[in-house]
Length: 236
Image (tube, rainbow, N blue to C red):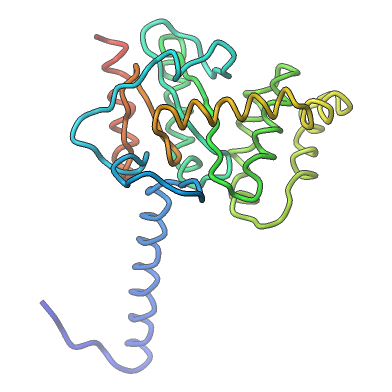
């Protein structure tokens, strides 16, 4: 039912609060819709952020390669996330992924794949994670990048020196880190992950696959549903 808006200072304050509430909802919706690659896109029905009438099954050989970084190793289920450290929606999913890792890590294999959504620092963050992985510190860098994402994820500034600082904080050999960071091997690996993403139809992040079937996230309620699906996968 429509009502007349109050006037005066109280009316102005109420109007401001209403606008801020609307903006907050729009920001949340935008984040949950995922990060899309800023190049030519397939139809919306193919994007990671859109729903489909049935789970999409893809080749597990393409989804998971032997050299992909893993957060956990379990034998009952496999959860694959195509992600970008710069993506706000991936950052929102991160706490749920951590809960799954803590609660089901001995039963579920969690595999991370890279998908470049062309944020200013997307590639640099991937290179940072891979250079840390070369020294056995992938998980520590993964955590650091997501836990600080709000400070750099949407920034137009080059964050390379910040990322090098993270490597120093983790006690990495900086000469080796810099060499791996800039290496062709790391660049080729990131490109191979992108090619696999394209092959299985990924066009935005986060895109998730549980035992080969795509799991679509549209709202925050889907975070809890993801945990439920993982629990069902390990119990059945």
